[in-house]
Structure formats: C-alpha cells, structure tokens
Image (tube, rainbow, N blue to C red; front, side, top):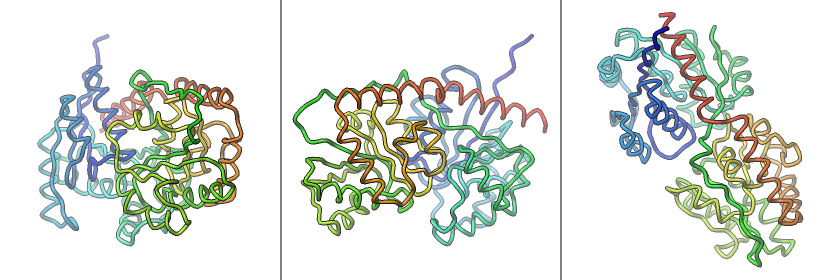
Length: 370
C-alpha cells in the first residue's frame, strides 16, 4: 500500500508567548517535521514570542499578523488570505479567540475544514468580559468546525453542557517527549525545602492561593522556601507576598524561564494550585522531570497525577497547606519514590509520539471527509 501523503496543517493561535497551548503546538509541529508525518504552518494572530523562534529553527514557517485591539472586517480578510496562501488540508485553531476567527475566515479562504482546540474547563466567570463574549460566540458557531478537540474529559463535558458541542468531539491530552527531559533527583542536603510552580500570572492559575498556603507553613516555623516563575509573575504576585507577611527571604518571584527543566532542578516539590485548567502542562513537565507533586482537582489534574493522596480541592488554602506539610514530613527516599512514579506515569500514558498520532489521525479523517 502506498504511503499516505503528509497532511498540510495550518495552525491559528493568538500568540507564541510561553504558555501551555503554545508549547503543545510547538511540540507537535516540530516532532511532525522531524518524522515527516505532517506538514505545518503557524499563523500568529497577534505578535510572536519565544516559540516563534523555536518553530522557525525547526523549519516550521511562522506568519505574524500583528493584531492590536479588536479584529475587524479588514483583519478577517487579511487572515483569510493568509490561510489560503498556505493551501491547508486542515486548519487547526487553538483557544477561543482563534477558534472563532478561524471558522469565520476559512469561509473566505476556500472553506478548508477547521478543527477547534479548547484548552480549559468552562468557567467564563474567570475570564475578562470580552473573552466571555468570545466564548458565547464559540457556542453559536460550534457546529461550524469539522471537529472539536478538548485536552481534558472534564473540559469536553463542561463545554458540551454549555452548548459548545459538535458531531465530532475528541479528547486528546497533552504530551511530552521524555527523551528531552533530564530526570532530576536532588540529593538530600541541609538546604531549606523548596516548593515551586511555573506558569504565567493570571488569577485562575491559583498563585495567590499557593502563597497563602505557604504563609501558613511559614507560621509553623518550618524552614521552607517558595519559588514562582512565569510571565508577569513578579508584578502580579508581589502584592500577595506582602499581604501574607512574607518577603523575598521566603518567596522568590522570577520572570519567564527559557530552560524550565534547569529551573525545576531547584525544587523539592512542584505544586499546581490552579482553580481552572484543561490538562495541566506545567504539572506534566514536573512529573516528567521526576519531581513529587501536589495538585488541586482542576480540570484533568487528578487524571494527570493519578495519585489522589496528593490532590486537594480547588481554592482550599487550608487543604493545600496541609498537603504541603505532609510532603515536608516525608523522608528524602520517599519523595524520590514519588518522583520516579510520576516520571513513569508520563512515560506510559502521555508520550508525545502517541499524542501526535491522535492529532494526525483526526486531521486525516477530517480532510478525507471534506
């Protein structure tokens, strides 16, 4: 049987700053190029970020449209021309804003099939007013795309109940290439125990709750520290650190990191305190690195971690602090065992090759049905 020609996939995404969706798109497109299984072009609606450079270095074309403010008819026509110029078999949109614009612009670009990608649970009250309007528009347009991908089962169920549904609904989790992740095992030392999490500053990521939980531990006179890094973290978190009576001797607030695995090696435990998630990339990366982890029950975080012992309710500061106390109380070998189990779970269930296979299977089915 002749080998099937690689699908041509054009991605639409708001930006390529360091975030979970942007990282996942980059992993898929670069791996697909390396194994020759599909061809990719990325259209960035606004301005580029670090992942644009990563994609280009891997030979993936990237087009920046430079949108500032609200998209009007002129921008939609420009987007349609950009899509048409790539001659896609499938247009893969990422997140609410790109989902909406892709479905509208594709109608004027030869009407290629569009696939949506939803990356969070349905909690519109956590979003700004404009995004809430875009989410409602997604509900109106949700029969337009050929398929809708959610990165978590909880996300799919919540969005379907809210009217964002389609004849073809798929759950495809995030994935990671363990070959690119060094296994981190901090040796026992006299240094203070260090908790941490990475991710951009937005309220739904739960950094304020994590700082409040850490403040409770600090009141126990436990010798522990907390490190947070990510886009806007120093600016967004400083007021919460001060309000909890903490300072930089307790909490380090750091900007976005280009090498997150190098940063993770300074931690003894990763904490994911999110109030809203789809499938948590940051938690998956910490597990892949062999760190013990604590998470809230946001989105598919429980499914990702697979160990209810270290899962607490969302927005429950007391429960989060208690889990952190229990983690400190474990001896070094017990924490190493937890970390090794986390890495093995990633190996068995969330390998990036398997995830790309699922995407490519859907893209080819959608293209064949057109």
